[in-house]
Amino acid sequence: MEHQQPHVVVHPLPVQGHIKPLLCLAQLLSEAGLYVSFVITHHTHKRLENLSALTAQFPNLHFEPFSDGLPDDHPRCLNFDFFIDIKTKTKPFFKDLLLSLDTKSEKGLSPPVTCVINDGYLSYPLEVAEELRIPLFTFIAHSACFLLTYYSIPKLIEEGHVPFSDNNMNLEINGIAGLEGILRRKNLPPACMMKEVTSPLFKQCLDESLAMNRASGLIINTFDDLEVQCLPHVANKFCKVYSIGPLHAFLNSKIGNQSQLIASHASLWKAEQSCIAWLDSQTLKSVVYVSFGTLAKRSVSQLLEFSHGLVNSGHPFLWVIHPDVVLDEERENAMPEELQKGVKENGCIVDWAPQEEVLAHKAVGGFVTHCGWNSTLESIMARIPLICWPYTSDQNINADLVSKVLRIGVELEGCDRQTIESTIRALMDGRKEEFQNSIDKIAKCGLDGIGHGGSSNQNLEFLVEDIKKIKS
Ligand code: UDP
Image 1 (cartoon, helix red, strand yellow):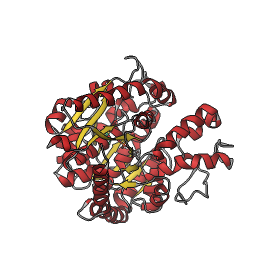
Image 2 (cartoon, rainbow, N blue to C red; image 1 turned 135 degrees about the horizontal axis):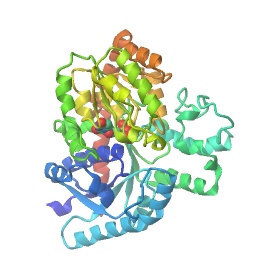
Image 3 (cartoon, rainbow, N blue to C red; image 1 turned 180 degrees about the vertical axis):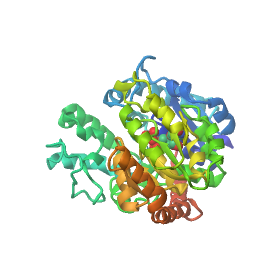
Image 4 (spheres, rainbow, N blue to C red; image 1 turned 180 degrees about the horizontal axis):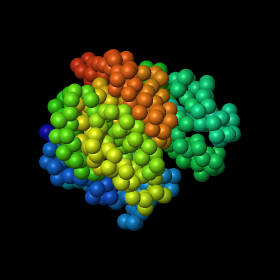
């Protein structure tokens, strides 16, 4: 009987890289017999590419749009001001939404809310959940090692590492347990780059983010063998940690290619399927796939230089040039004709690709990526070695994890055409076997983890059991 079902309210940060893994988690919880409300803002709701297909495909997920309290013309860019704005403006609307779900349950229309699963970088849901005495679990869409960098900030400030005394961003920082060998200045959260990092307002925001460990537990889209070094240190900071990734592969393993369906229906952009036909015409493992995700930026001159390196590598390529990739201050500059012309002969350019499908295609042999966490996980599970060209945020530490710890790819050491060409040749030709062997091993660990008795599989079961134990 539906009304005995535990009711989980899932609330993502409104960006592509967070919506998809949380939808995968929501669907997994729904498959496990829970009633799931997926709560998104009106603004995100409007932007989802194909919400009607999504609701038709996943009829057991209940979509609950609500107002974020911001004016229509608010830029909603993921910067400090945005987080300050939503902290006060969105909070009352979120509270009203939870109260309205209560009213719904009183009318017998849905079960009472059991708990909230909140995107860890939104602080207001934790405050609201505490006010309403609803248990809350924090979800992190990025790596465990990046989460540890956040928790290291107070110590780094105390020891004088932050704010930085000079511009050497490659400087290694030692002494943070779990991050040995992979902590460089540039791998720290962008907040550390700002002078205001010691200001009271900043400190307050940081404390609010770190307060996510007041939650009943941390759910993280990673798997034990992938982040052996730092997961135990993350575990020390939370009452419970459920590492249940890679969520896209987990969902696909339950009921074939569900996460690809989520990606196509819940995308903020429409994927150009024509690139799959183009891939069909290419030879086995010959194609370099290039995508910088949704938040990374490049200058026009970097893109141009990159295109030369790509063409000179001699490999065919599929390149996602998303309109948002160009640096804001260069938006006015048209993409140079040279780029469009030079690449057409040997490549295929699209605005947005069905990435999981592309990575699973037999013609693809390497991935030049900004190292967003979803892209990294998708590449690993598709066994496609990576060239890392990180831009910001977690991408830098992910690149070190890929190239230094897991050795399943290399980091681009410069963005001139010669370096780009030689790095692509190394990945696709010279060091191909070495990378393929390492990625095959870690992908197998990932598969074992989501399989019967595997760590991610068990952690999901523990999470479901713990939710079921909560008294409504
Ligand atoms: N993606 C896609 N098509 C594209 C480029 C990206 O479907 O052309 C998806 C990709 O599969 C991933 C997400 O967008 O799931 C990007 O998330 P990620 O964490 O890699 O990077 P972000 O955009 O958050 O920096």
